[in-house]
Image (cartoon, rainbow, N blue to C red; front, side, top):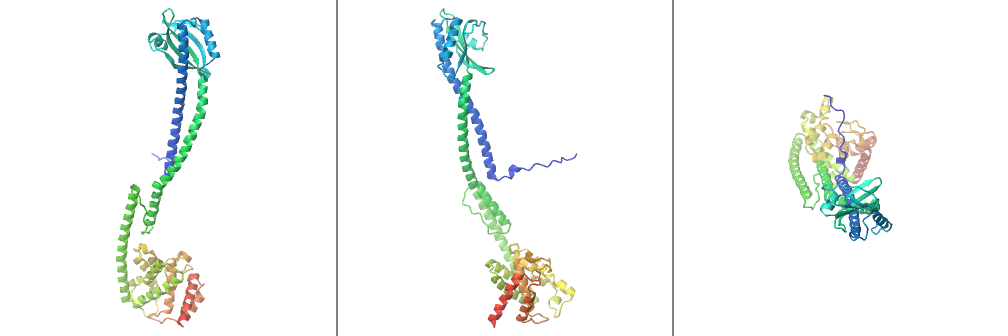
Amino acid sequence: MPQSSHSPRPRSFLRLPLSIRFLLFAVAILILNGLLMSRQTDQVIEKAFLDQADQKIHLLLDQIRRDIEQNRIALNSPSLADEVEYLNEHPDFGWQLHISALYAFDANGKILAHSQNKEGTKALEPGSPYHQVIHLRAPSLGEVHERKDDTIKGDYLLPMTLPDGRIAGVEAEVDITGLQEAISGFDGPFEQSMWNTILLSSAVMLILLGGLTHFWLTGPVQRMYRAILDLSGGKLDTRIDTHSKDELGQLANGINQLAQSVQDLLREQERTYMAALNSLAQALQAKDPNTAAHSARVSRYAVKLGKALELDNEELALLKKGALMHDLGKIGIHDSILNKPSGLTDDEYAEMKKHPEMTASIMKPLKRFRAFAEIAAWHHERWDGTGYPDGLKGDETPLLARIVAIADTWDAMTGDRVYRSGMPKAKALSILESEQDQGQFDPELIRIFINMMKRDSSSDA
C-alpha cells in the first residue's frame, strides 16, 4: 500500500519552555473555571430572584385566597377582573410582574370564575398541579414556566375552601418577563465585576506561579542543562550549585557526583598516559638526543613568546608541554633518516613530513589537552595555506600551534644539526625580517618574536 505523503505535524506546544506550558495550562484552567462560575452564577442569581418572586406572589395569592374564603372578594368573573386590574395598577412586589389571569376552580376542575371571563375544565390527572391542589391540598408555586412569543409566564396555585365548604383552588397566571429583564440587568454588571475580579486575581496568580515555577523548577532545570552541556564539552570542573533538598536537588547532586567520578577517572587515565608519553620521550631522547634537545629549546622559545602575548598560566603550561612533545612522532621515523648526517632525499623528506600526524595520533587520547594534538599536528602549517599536513590558512591554525611554528623555525635556523651548525642569531633575525610578510608566519606574531629576540640579543651584548 502506498504510504501517506503527509508528514506528522510538529508538536509546537511541546517545544515551548516548560514554564510557558505550565502558565498556558493554568490560563486554560482559569478560563474554564471562569466560564463554569459564570454559568453557575447565572443559575444561582436566577433562582434567587425567582424564589423571592415566588414567595411574594405566594403571599399575594394567599391573601386573595383568604379574601375569597371570607367573601371579601366575590367569587365571580367581574370581581376577579377588578382585582387583577387593581393589582397590576398598584404592584407591591416589584420587578414589573404582571398578573395575566386570576381564576378559581372546583374539586372537579371546573372553572368557577375567571378574570378574563373564560370557562372550561382543568384536568386533574395525577401529577398535575390541579390534582396536587385539589387532592393533596398542597400549593403549586411557579414550578412550571411557559415561554410564549416574547413573554414568560408562571402558574401559581393554592388550595382553598369556599364559604359553602366546598374544596376548590385559586390560580394566578403571572407574566414574569419583567423579572427576567431585571435578572439580566443585574446579572450583566455582576458578571462583569466577577470577571474583572477573576482576571485580576488570575494575573496576580500567574505572576506568582510563573516566578515560583522558574525559581523552583525551570530555573534549576536550565542550570542543570547548561552544566551538562559544559560537562559534555569537556569542562569537567563544572558543578551545579544547589542547596535544595527536593527531587531536583537530588538530581543535581547526582549529576555533580557523576561529573566528579568521570573527572577522577579521566585524570587518572591522563596521568597514566602522560607517564607513557614521558617514557616515549625518554626513548626518543635515547634514539635521537638532538631531537630531544631541539624540543626543549623550542619549548623555551615558545613559552617566551607566549608570555610576550600575555597568555594565562593555563595556556602557558599547555604551550610548554605541547612544544616539548611536538616531535614525539619522530620515534616512528627510521634511524637512518632521523640521524642522517647529510641532506634528505625527496623520499626521505616525505617520510619525515609524516611525523606531525604521527605525533598527533599519539596525543589524540588526551582529549582534555586538545592543544597537545593541535600543536603536534599543525606546527608545520603556513599562514598562506601552503603548509602541511592539512594546508590550513591564516587563523585556521590554532594560536599555540602558530607560536610553536615560529619557535620551531627559529631553532631549526640557530640550532646545531648532525649535518650542519646553526647560523648566528643576527643572520637568523635578518632572514626572518625579510620573510615576515612572505606568508610563512602569522605577521603579528613574527614581528613580536623578532622584537623579543632583538631585545634578548641587546641584553646579552
